[in-house]
Amino acid sequence: EEQRGTDPTTLNSEQVAEQEQEQEQEQEEEREQEQEQEQEVVRAQDESPFPHNYTRKDDLPGPWPVVVLGVPSAVETPEKIANMFYPLSKFAVHTSLRSLPRPLSFPPYLYISDNYFQTKWSLNTFQRVKNVTIVMDWIPDTNALGSVENPEDNNNDNSIDDDPKNNNTPVPTARSTDSSVRTTTPLDYLIPPSNNTNTTHRPTNNGVTRILTSSQITRLKKIFHLFEYRQQHALDVHQLREFLLAMDVDVSQSDINGDFEELAGKERKGKRGSGKGVTYEDIKRALESGSYQKIQKGRHFVALSLVEAESLRGLIHLRGRRPLLDGMNAAIGLWFGPVLVDCSAGYTEPRDYQHQTALQCYRFLNGDRSFSTSHANLVLRATQGNEPSIREAWWKEVISCRRRSQNPPTEPNLHRILSIKDDLRVTEFNGYLASARGRMKARGMMRWDAFRAFDCDKNGVLSVEELYGGLTWLGVMLSPSEVKEIHEEMDADGDGCVTYKDFSRVLCDPGKRVERRRAVGYFENWEEEGWDDEEEEEEEEG
Image (cartoon, rainbow, N blue to C red; front, top):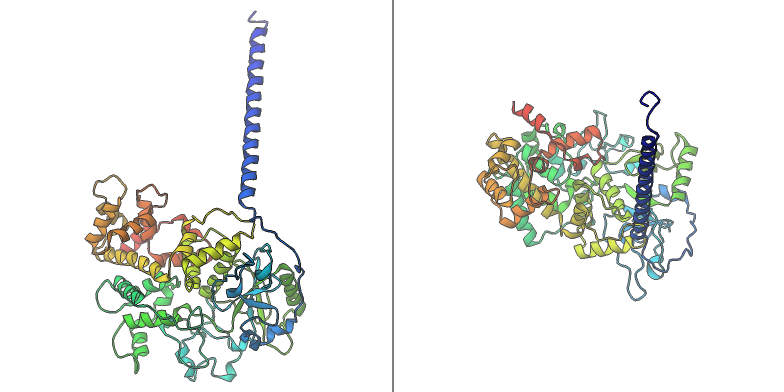
């Protein structure tokens, strides 16, 4: 029988087993498909707009004269620019006939197209809010575009704005490679605007000088001493860079390599006394004036409808290398997020801080929930003129008219935008980390050394008590609540324990983050991955 073959009974049993296995696999696949379909239904329900009585009345796009793009005085109209654009600070959705619209204050250089969302809809009708897809960077007059130079130098003979012969001088940008254009130095970020009519910076996001309260002044003094951990009553070049990075102003090592002492002496000559470094008064003046933001006067951002974006891109192609408008110096750039889709002749890209602030504010308007820490800080600084409760109410009202998740805003960085009162709280937190890094470096300790020293029970994780003891040992005197806040920031997974990876992610050098960001692309959210620069640190220590 062995020579004749296998027993037929055995073959039948194997076939039955295979069939049963195939049936089980098919049933399992069917169950998975049903679960996926149920999840899709739940997801669709979560992302459905609130069931308002929506209408599409008067939803057709309206034409406007493109020649207005070349009239700088049109921007001076506070309510609406020639029935085309209106400030983002006036955008709000309809909530009830018994209540007025509740807009949110934004930087004055941000606008909304009337074809994107009409202001009259806020008063009496529910309209679904479109996605912000294309943002136009609009320069009405390229010759009048404020440079990023020190505004106090505008009275000098070498000033670009004061010399009529230099109308065609290229405006320096963050990506400018022309060596003839003076680059921005670290101290330039702390020079407040002068009373010169050619000043190139808006004082603050709201167009007025920021007045610090007594509690904010007290907090600012504490922040200054956190960065000034060497107790020399002034910030040196490295501490100044730490402060600027804490304010989310990207300053690379090449930016900081200038002659710091010469610059400090020059800025104090005849008006700020003598001394080296940057004092508390310098920091306070910069914060009140908002000069560190380097906002270019004469540059405006507008959220367009897709029809407008299509038409303007057609005009750009039609004009080719000629100016956008005959006899005018207008220029525009069309941006899809961080990507420049198209631009007219004579267009120059904006500086990173102003550009990023604009893009992140429009993402906030879009109902996005995923923000990197630095991007969330930019939105916070742009909207800090509003109380946190007003910010949250506005955001919820807007997403209720969108196909977005209607779940509470529990994402950490979105929650930061909606809950923190002002940017001083963020800067103070960054000051804690800067002080810890500086004191670790003074002791010749790398992050791994500090982590091992803090970990008293040698279990590979840090508790709140161990972190408190370690920071106190370093000389960073914080309250238990402040240490708990740092511990929660480090604890990425929320399990109550801080691993070395968590510890290293929060305490890594922010300057190296800047260099890395510029290498891989400024707009990448790579920092959320918690990259570790310990090898670079070892090379520097070596």
